[in-house]
Length: 168
Image 1 (tube, one colour):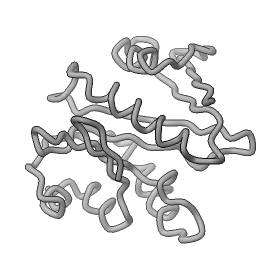
Image 2 (cartoon, rainbow, N blue to C red):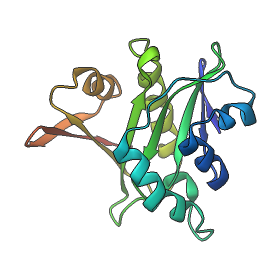
Image 3 (cartoon, helix red, strand yellow):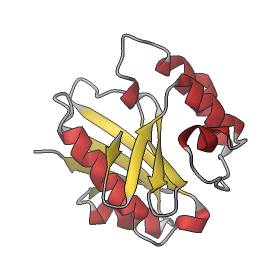
């Protein structure tokens, strides 16, 4: 678990991921949080079931790179979004992140703060040298979050923009 002034970022274990996927508020109950209305995108749900759950069960790997991290607002006592790494660092020390803020909590700087903190965590990991992210061209809010966290636009393919942050 890592924190900011307003947020708690918590990586989920296998059983907690199952509760997240069920979306029956049992995860919030486990953490003593108020229920949050969220919509799990079909692509995310499929990824969680097919790759994240099996990877998190592998005790020989660092599950923090394999799982979903929930983002909790301390003030609201609710899950307001999530963030994940797309696997462990590759041979060049590069990792990719994906993230999403639940609709009711957008536009309040939560994800900018969460991305900044997860980058600070990544800097502390000896194998991480750079962080990548992708955004849709039309998702201005998403790439504004990356720009505020000093990511540089490095390319585009079709409707997707690629971003990179080199870590010192």
